[in-house]
Length: 302
Image 1 (cartoon, helix red, strand yellow):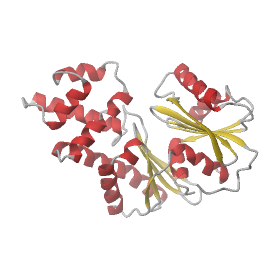
Image 2: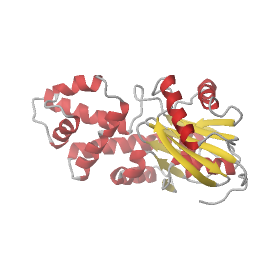
Image 3: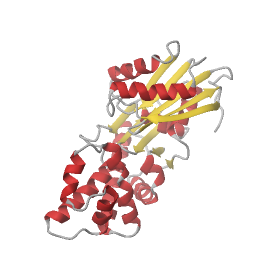
């Protein structure tokens, strides 16, 4: 990681990446990471305010609050100034004297790719694209949450596996490779039992984890599974293309999120889809997004 002039050796800061399923935090002394911690999500669109408070308390207990002068938090669900203020107040309970900056979590993706302008794509539990051009103009596409969108996300892929299984059942067909593996993974003996299970206590994180069943089947050549992954890649590329069109830029495109960095088939399809749209310099993150906080602080962008 390169050094940036905006960070002083005596500066102590905390960086937070607040995703749909977890909160990842680091403590920075100058440009060095001296502590790291993970807890549950502190995104109040996904968990209650009290649960978010508890998860932040775990993070700050592990990282320490002494001498912290800056906190930079990237979070999903920060769509308005009111959203940012609500999260800022939760954070400031732990570090009342620190300067707290709240940015959209996709901005951390771009920063972790060490580029001041371009398009960041999160392909994780949820999905969203966010970008900024050289003049500081910002644009986004998606990120509306699982009830309104999140196309191409791990949750979306898991839900499509459920829909595929139920469709086969409605047609009077026996479970195929994907359906059989999904039933086994969920632990129910028949497709119709998936309906109640889906609407019961299992949440976004659980069904997002079922995306692995689809990827495994797709890698082994199962046609419907490959079709689900191809549709996910198309929709994700569409989010990026929307932002590119709004900002009139062609890249770079920095891709993060669990399935964005860990699923080679999705990566290949994304690379092809983005290239076909004339988008160049496509980068898949090799470090966790929270480390983008170093770049933001160093560049004076947070």
